[in-house]
Length: 78
Image: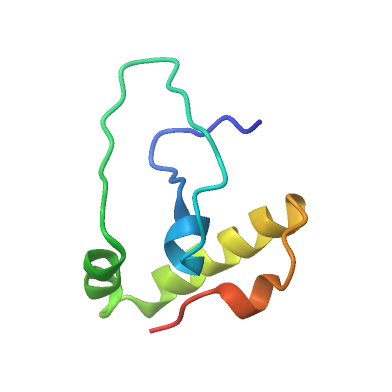
């Protein structure tokens, strides 16, 4: 289980790998969430490839922590 702070994100593994969602999320306080389809996120990130790189790095780390196979082969790139 992981506790996320304001400004952090979740769901990136499913979004970036096109795999089924692999985690459950529960808020402990009132929370505002933003749900983006993959296409919308990639369009928003086109001018910011470093942000996508950071998301891929975080996804890779989380996948390794959860022992996903073929971690690097699954991530998307612009």
